[in-house]
Length: 160
Image (cartoon, rainbow, N blue to C red):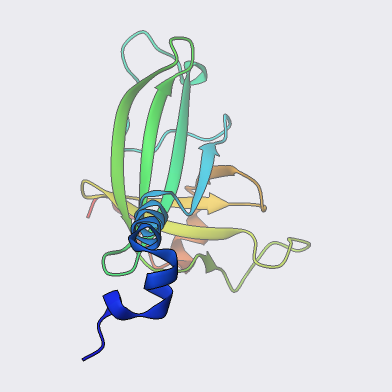
């Protein structure tokens, strides 16, 4: 019976190679697939509230996408007080699919694959994230045409 321990590659590279491979796999699972910052022009996602005495211009939101083989795709959001350089809230959400959604009716002249959308649900609140271009910026959209094409009922709150 031939075991991994008797494998010639293992004999040459030793147990350290196995450890390195396991560490790299751990990093791949932990590191985000991509990271974005909410446009200053965009409103905050509904799962975040403006703290008392703080204006929207004092806040920044970052979003990291994570793709996990078994659980699916998720997004992690951080609400940051820019002046104090302090994270004041975090939220983790589930994406509705594994790929960005590109609408059938795209704006004329928009680049191929854009705008694209992700439907994200955090603590029962659903928002639509919009990526207008291939850039590290995202928006929260309330466009009734986009929401309708995505099948989101605009006549009610986006709470599910």
